[in-house]
Length: 121
Image (cartoon, rainbow, N blue to C red):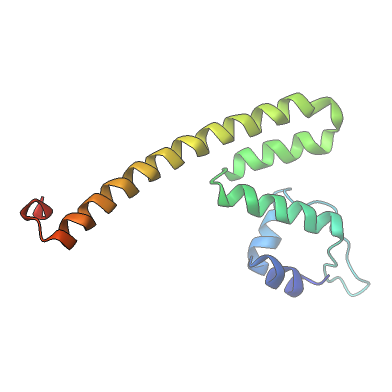
């Protein structure tokens, strides 16, 4: 697949795809004889994983570390698992904070809907 197609499919800019390749998150992207990128299914699988992890607020550094380990092979399985567990814990904490904020907003909205004087606080 050409970069434009991959960009549209994953809703990622071509610049971001080139950046991910430059820093090693996406590796071994074949080129056509004219030098254009021609993404494989393996490249697309990596992009889908990267996009998922970025939407979970995994840092670029964390992703780079994970992908480096991934490319080293099965002997890094335990370390990769630890990275994912750590990221899951961070995401769970973020979700709890967001849930608390949502509950507070909902209470505030309910006060406004009831015309409560407490709503101004």
